[in-house]
Amino acid sequence: MAIEKNILITAGDGIGPEVMNEVQKIISFLNHEGLANFHVTERPIGGASLDAHGVPVTDETLELGKSSDCVLLGAVGGTQWDHIDFALRPEAGLLKTRKELDLFANLRPALVFDALIDASTLKPEIIRGLDILIVRELTGGVYFGEPRGIFDLPNGERQGVNTQVYTTSEIHRVARVAFELAQKRGQKLCSCEKANVMESGKLWREEVSKLASDYPDVSLSHMYADNCAMQLLKNPRQFDVIVTDNLFGDILSDEASMLTGSLGMLPSASLGARDANGHQNALYEPVHGSAPDIAGQNKANPMAAILSFAMALRFSLDLPVIADHIEAAARAVLDQGLRTGDIMAEGCTQIGTSQMGDAVIDELKIKLMKAA
Ligand code: IPM
Ligand code: MG
Image (cartoon, rainbow, N blue to C red; front, side, top):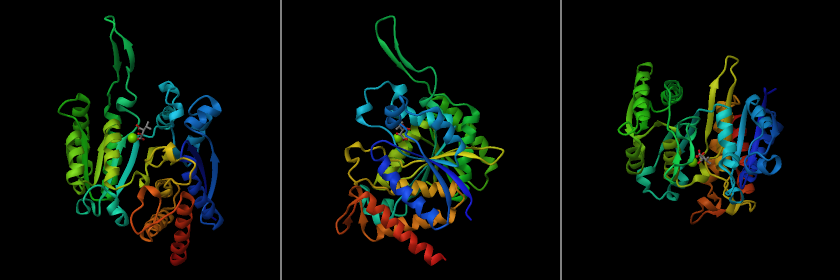
């Protein structure tokens, strides 16, 4: 009998519910086959939670997130909530969840699938075989630094303030995650900041450097974040793992995603520290947003959500082999020429969200049968 695991699903807004529905189908399939024993609880987040409970995430949902083996999130946000105060906006629900669960390490892989090589705006020879992992610090920096606010000055001007701040321990813990991941991959780690302009960047560089001797098998380099943005376009395959702060990570990961051709394919994992009992808070979400323009039309690409679930199987649910099978199944579906609208190309067959999910499950069945 497979070990029991508790999963909290917060589907959220826009296309979130649709893509998470495809993940739910895979979960039901794994349970039904006796390959997993997953208990799913569902709660709203973002705008959906705001409408239902008056806040973008409730304390009960946060507590459930902490006690679950992992949280699977769809997407948050939509134009109908754009006029609302920062503190109550759907995005605030996501930021609060990251902070409350102390999910300081955000893993954003950018991987080019051979079948999608023409979907990128870059030349195939630049991106073929690309496999980058961005490790973004997620609970500090300018996203959370104090003071912050919009202030009225005595001279009648208004002043907008945000504070970029990092401590040694915040830098060390995310850098260690990045070093350890680099050890398991290509043994290269590039740390990005603006040490030429910012004290927080100078500290970041010094503190990351101090850890290097603990990881002699990893070759560490440093790059200014603006140069990194340029190098990602010029020669992206020079990178293996990139570690960077919250804001630069936000920007560089969007840039890296487009090297792969579609935001609709990219998964992410946000991880906390492991406690003495072995429990680790973890949240998995597609990098794409809520895409309100195509919500509810069976058009969204569920692959990023499905691949995020594969990351959950690997990092939180102790089923790395099933994760491998799901990733291989996703690849096989693309090789068959099946495409949602966002990755549609000549000669391929366009299908909807639920058909894409079904196709992955069909391929998964084949992979499992071959492996048995
Ligand atoms: C991301 C998003 C979020 C961020 C938004 C939705 C708050 O852009 O996860 O990259 O800025 O972190
Ligand atoms: Mg972003």
